[in-house]
Length: 620
Image 1 (cartoon, rainbow, N blue to C red):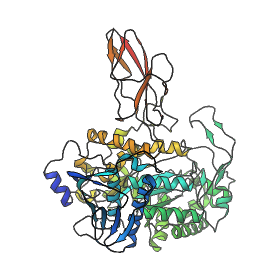
Image 2: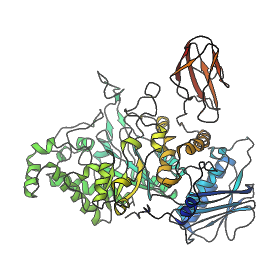
Image 3: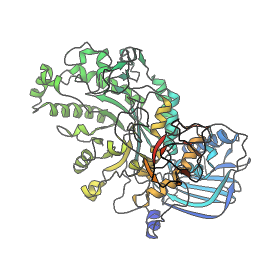
């Protein structure tokens, strides 16, 4: 079981000391997520060509941390630091693991003018300390390639003590509605590592596509991995349109092993999700005998929920799923295996003789209890193989499996109910954690599923509903997670757009102690994060200029526009055209003598522009 690191009444020693002194209104350093304590010292440390990374003793996990940092520095500077075993010294970074008095995954970082010392209880803590060290460097350190641009690779002298609030800090990706190549999955993991997230929830099976190779059932990749066409536009559009293009793909078992290794090198656990009993039409297209009706079926081309699900009355269903899970467990070393359990209509079970016989034979009362029987049976199988079951909050219906962990997505209530039953919970409510929701007014944003989830709303995410739970029950809230469902996210660029910068707000919600979180402070620090994203060539959502929809001024009055990114330039038009890189630059203010429509847009130094904001200017 994942160790619960959320302490209800006792903070870590460093946090307690810092908070007793009173948290400052603003942090001193532009680090995301914000650390427990930070102190700026006099001077700076310069990274030069003879900089070395020193291991206190040879240790494979610590060596991986050193290799990661060396690769990051080489990527942007062209210089690969030597890694040696010994004592620290001038112009070195000393990595020390196994240090007592530091929480798991926590670290202590001290930067002096002559060198850096990073201490932790474990290698994961060292890795997160390295992420902080990288954020202390100038933003160009995140470039994916060396540049002739002159950069002073200096680090301010600081002392930082840090540890995460939650043990589970997750990010999800649905690769079934739209498939993403191995190269992008690795990039996604890099984004997670940068934000100190430690669990990748990989949604691998769905109605619209099966994405994992199972050698015992080759039709899952020959048939289930491909659909005949894909919906164009929104689900609610009438009439619906389709692209008439075959679509699909899957990950071979070698691909998966490669990704699991890549994640482990970044101290990220990969949790696979194999959906059951619902969201299973793709599998039924290949093996219709596992359904209640016998089919035939096609891999689903439209989003939404299907009434066709696995038959709970047939032994063949459980044989199939157990064989699938055996291969899944061979590929993924994670303690948790996610089985979905959500959105499983009971229509087919109600009319199925096999399912009704199962209800009678097992002494069940209804189809909800039949789903509970289904989930409990799968849980027993996973437990027999040393694994634990995790599912969406629908697994509460009909009775919760004895050792199940609940992922609460339909608000917080499912998680509250599970915690009251002494089950571990991961909070991931749609209100704060669904990154397929629009980030601003849908009129200026790309197509999305619906909903509204701006950056500030994500930042307000509080995983532990303290008012609803006792202290003992609160300890069962082991963390939080954001979900990226991809019905409308068909490209890598758009996935990055929907992910960033909201992932920065999520990271702070699950890492930083509640008492240290402050939106105004975060809004200042995110400006440096935008620069890091830019240097990474990430297609992040550029914040739009800050100005009201309607502004009233007197004739000759001035209109002002704020730049929330803190860098780049705002360009504007008043003739109805779209602002471009050649449009006039907004400076301090803009004078209006007569009414008009002001259209403004923030441009980065790279030439990328934000969405366009239109403002009606009324002149009195």
